Image (cartoon, rainbow, N blue to C red; front, side, top):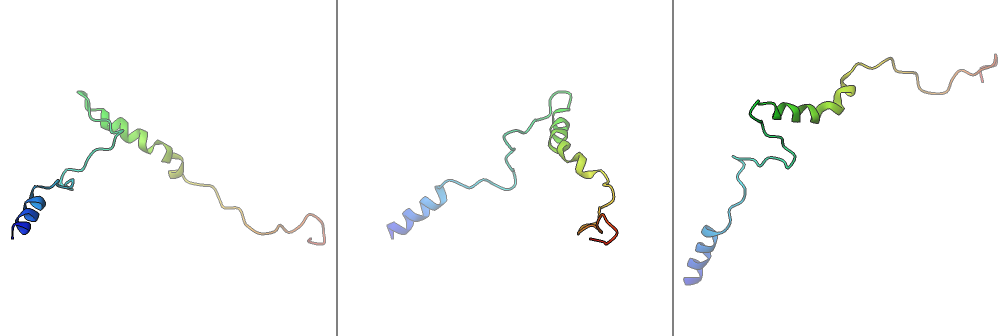
Length: 74
């Protein structure tokens, strides 16, 4: 009986896992400064490499072998 009570105390008093209600900030997170610009600068730094991938692309070149360079088609 005392073993069950001891296990119950250990389970109740044991370390609690991190709560999903308050997620931890990443190590490189720039908190807002007095001007409120810290977060915006962090977002710009994060998504700047994706800028070129958002731009429209040119026409796709056809794949496969070419028609050849002489009149025989080879």
